[in-house]
Length: 234
Image (cartoon, rainbow, N blue to C red; front, side, top):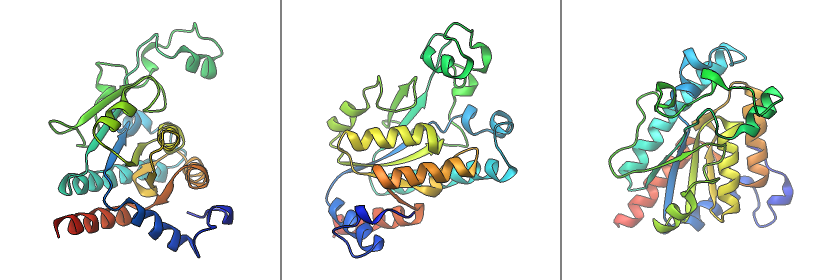
């Protein structure tokens, strides 16, 4: 993912910059954040009508597969996995209803996504927290707004984060930006998040790379985790 030259002043190339970024994280504690991989944001029957093309629907499923790989890699190397889920109600965050419908007072009805306690809010694709893994519930876009996420990460001694999930331009983008503004270095694997339109996904990644995050791939992140684990073991 290209970045402007203004953000490369201490590196000869983007590859060198990425190597420097990874090297600076050695010995520090990272966490994998899984954002909103839930039925209403990922299941074909829930999102098919929102996807611009069949490929966009497939991209969501592919991203879920990459998140599976990252969760497995994180667990295998002792990196904490943090699960961030949207849980809404008919009265929560009414300004979002104003934005979409022109009024805060229009009943949201059953179309509200991820209503707490319903099947729409359940984890999707075989992904789910293991015993002892942190689960944070939110009712807005960012995992940090109105939640204990920052305090939880600090208490766990987390120094940097990998942000994955759905959708790239919405809750992933918001959570990654807020993580950076809370002083966490942020890595976003571009293939472990997705949108319902390629343009949204690409634009969000470009914005993240410019302003808040190191945008890379799942393979690169897994390689870093494995190398870090080998160094710790040695």
